[in-house]
Amino acid sequence: MIDCADHLGAMRAAAPLVHCVTNFVAMEPTANALLAAGAAPAMAHAVEEAGDFATVAAAVSINIGTPSPRWAEGMAAAAGAAAARGAPWVLDPVAVYASPWRGELAARLLALKPTAVRGNASEVLALAGGASAGRGPDAGDAVAAAEDAARRLARATGGVVAVTGPEDFVTDGRRDLRVSGGDKLMTRVTALGCALSAMVGAFLATGRPPLEATAAALAYYGLAGARAAREASGPGSFAPLFLDALAGLDPAADAGALAAAVREGA
Ligand SMILES: Nc1ncnc2c1ncn2[C@@H]1O[C@H](COP(=O)(O)OP(=O)(O)O)[C@@H](O)[C@H]1O
Ligand SMILES: Cc1ncsc1CCOP(=O)(O)O
Ligand SMILES: [Mg+2]
Image (cartoon, rainbow, N blue to C red):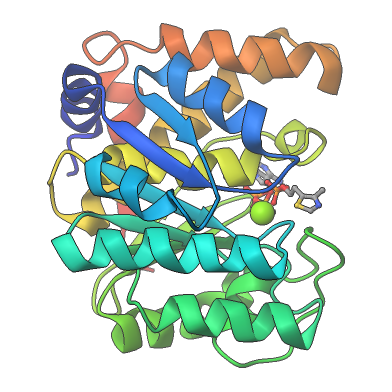
């Protein structure tokens, strides 16, 4: 059993600074999700300083959602600075299949060996070199179809790969975990995947084993999503309720529900 509540408590106690080089769409939702969870966000992408931010942050999250050539240099600088000092960093390969240039950028970042990759099934399939049915930033493939690709990617990087969707799949290439929770409404509000990648960074910052820390982040996020959906009447009301649920989830009171969300194996 993975003690997700212990991971959540440790993350909140550390209140880790997560430096995000993320996309225009995701900046505010990501910063708000981190703050609601009890972490601290920083958003800065200029190549002149992205490495400086990454040098003091407890974790780094790199997201290729709205790249430009200079922005890409900021991503490489931040990822490189994190990798150089052994700090955890997460790669979110948003729509990696959308253009050859985006694919090359993702491959360049992947070569810096992210501690974790978090993407939807279409992104993970494409990042591993396969065909995918993704459309814009949205998945067109089932999570199950990306499991082998995720295991191969994890073995190639030495890190963790998380494929999210109706049920999330997390692997380090040897051990597989599955995480239930969430709600379909989470696909009707933009940037919740991007914010989740930064959340994985916050949990990795505790220094706990990356596979388990990633699963704990997904369980926490999914439980908050399911709770918010119970009260929401649509995507508009879901978004603030989700922030409240992230803030309100309690390691002691919710330990059972968090642990029940994660199962090992097939
Ligand atoms: N159909 C679904 N049912 C429940 N939760 C979902 C569903 N689709 C996505 N999620 C959840 O939404 C969050 C964002 O994941 P996802 O939509 O896969 O990422 P992205 O926005 O990058 O495509 C994750 O917590 C995931 O578990
Ligand atoms: C709509 C959009 N366009 C480029 S990045 C982005 C946000 C994608 O967010 P997510 O991958 O979390 O759905
Ligand atoms: Mg995404």
